[in-house]
Image (cartoon, rainbow, N blue to C red; front, side, top):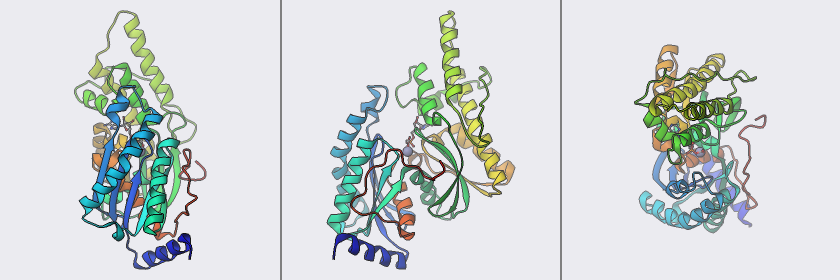
Length: 355
Ligand code: KG4
Ligand code: ZN
C-alpha cells in the first residue's frame, strides 16, 4: 500500500477517536517554530527560534537569510520539542505545517521538513493556512472557546476581520486594502529610529505619551469593514518630516501615542461594527498586533460596554509560533483535510476564496 493510502487510513482512525498528537511546523517569515499539541488544545512543547536580531541589522526581513536560518534551526527545534513533550517520534499521530501565506523560500523549508517527517513516520500531513493558525491561538489560550465567533487578525502581513462559523470554516467580513496594521506600525517606528520590528517598541514608547497631541486624517475605505493603513502611515510620516524640515522636533512619545491610538481606533471601530452586525456574542483578537497594549485594553473596555465576551491570547501566542499551527491542524485533520506529498508552498494563498 502506498504512503498516501496508509496516511488516509490513519487519518480516518484519528477522526473516529477525535484525538491526535500533532507535531506542528511554522516557518513562514522570520520565526522558526516546532510544537507538539494534543487534540488541538493542549501544548506539550512549543519551541521558537527567532531571527529578529539578524534581520534588525538590515531594517527588515531578508528572505534569503530567513530561509537559510530556518534550515539550520528546524531539526534542532524538532529534537528539542520531542524532548520537551517527553515523547518519542513514533507517538506522533500527524504532522501539520504552514504552507502559506508567507515568504516562498521560508515556507518551502518548513513544508519540505514536514513532508519528509510525515513520510518517514508514515503519518498524515496536514496543510495549515498561517492566518488560520493565528485565529486558532485562541483555542489554546481558551479551552472553552467554540465557534461561532468574530476574530480580528492583525499581524505584520495581514489585517482581517473573519467570522469563524465552524472549525475550519471562515467567512471574510473585512480586510486591509493596502498595508497591514503591523507593517504600518513598523514603518512609522522607523521614523523614530526604532529597530525592526518597531511595533512593540513603538507600543512601549506610546505608553508614556499624550495621544491627543497630534491629529491624523481619518481612514477612508469603500468596504464597510475594510481597513486602509497606507494613507494614515504616509500622512503620519510626512507630518514628521515637515515638522523636522521646518526646524521643529516631534515629541516621540506623544507622536507614537497619537499614531497608536489612530490605528487601534480604526481596527476596533470596524471590528466592533462587524461583531454587532453579525450578531456575535464572542470576539477574539489574534496576530502579532494583538499584543499591542492599547488594543488589548480598548478591546476589553468596548467588549464590556457591548456585552460581548472577549478572547485574547497571551503575547507569546499572538506572534508567530507553531502551537497555533498544531491547533488549526487538529481541526483540519478532523475535517478530513490532509495533503499528499505534492504539497507545495503557496506564498499568496487566501484563507477564504472571496478574499
Ligand atoms: O503575527 P506576527 O508575529 O507575524 C506575521 O504573521 O506578520 O506579527 C508581527 C507583527 C510585526 O509587524 C510587529 O511589529 C507587530 O506584529 N507587533 C506589534 C506589537 N507586537 C508585535 N505591533 C504593535 N504593538 C505591539 N505590541
Ligand atoms: Zn503571523
